[in-house]
Every structure is written in C-alpha cells, then in structure tokens.
Image (tube, rainbow, N blue to C red; front, side, top):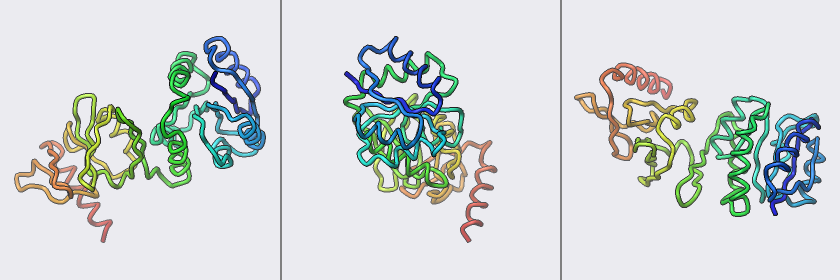
Length: 252
C-alpha cells in the first residue's frame, strides 16, 4: 500500500484530491493532511509517506519551505498549484511532476497513475528535490534533470556544449566530451533552455553560444569547444553573427 499526504491551505482542495484518490486508486491510502507549512512538516515526519501532494502557496510560507524543513526527503512529490511560470519551469528542469489548478481530472489520473505504479521504486527521488530547491533558490536554474533508459542524470547547464536532434530523441554533448541520449525532442530543449545562452542555428542543432569556438569561412559550419560540428542555415547566419558579436562585447 502506498501512503500519501495531502498539503493544501484550502480544505476544498484537500477534499477534492481525497475524492479522486479514493475513487481511482485502491493502492493509495491517505495517512495525513495539512493546511500550513508547520503542520505539513509534522505530518510528513510522523507518517513517513511515499508520496506528497503539495500546494505552493500557504499562509505561513510555501511548499518549497516544507521541503526545506524535511531532513530525509525519501518521498515523491506531485505539486498541485495555480499557474506560476517560474515554478513550473523549475519543475521541468528538475523532472518533478505538477498538476495545475483547477485540477483537470485526466491530468491528475495520468500523473498519479504513473506514480502509483512506480513510486516505491522511483529512482533518485531526493536528488530530484535537491535540484528543484537549488533551482528555485537561484536566479535561474543551473542544473537540469535528464531521464535516460537507465537513470536520471543531473547536469550543469553550462557544461552542455550542444544538443543534436535524433528524431524524437536528442543527443547532448558535454564539455568533457561525453554524450547522453534522452527521449526529448529538440523543440522541448529549445523551450526549456530559452533563458540560457542557447541558440538553434539549424533544425538539427541547439548550441550553447558560450562554447562556440569558430565558424568556417564558408559560414555553414560552427565548430564548438569540444570539436563537434553544428550546421548553420543560410537564413540564420546574420542573426547568429549578431548574437556572437553581442556576446563577445559583453565579455569585454
């Protein structure tokens, strides 16, 4: 049996989650609820849940404060929250699931269904939360969680040289010349990394402008710091050169 705790400052929201869980997941039992940061800390520490449904905004703090206060975060988390673009981006960087309010039943069932099958064996749960808190506390996320067929890798964004499209997969190349293949397309990475100095010079490449070494005289190939090549489409050449010029000026 999977033990769950629900944390939300609104009693109606708690009752809604209870109802959805009781009607759809016989393998999940609710062992506690809380409506404040202080109460959440007590309930989680005393009940040792496998999964926590966690709201962000509460009268005495927020959901991130709850996680900061728990010394052993060996549970999975699904955030249930009103729309907050900054927080949602942090969730995506950290591979943490979230459900938006008002709750869409299909989204809820899909998210909880995945956890109900794997929560007791979920890999690197505490690492995910650590990365989330690190990203939330920073001005912008510095690490990203990357799911592979064998593990979840937590990497520094500045270490990514470029990302190359492989159909619905992407190959990430790093400064230490290692590579990682993940089941996320290039468009998803382009959106996720839009606040960082990444640029898509070609439909098959997303590059870190900080790691550009040179552009060939023909102007159709970009050589990166690790020696890897990214193609530069003709229609993006002027825009790319302007970006690089601006980047060089900022470094002076």
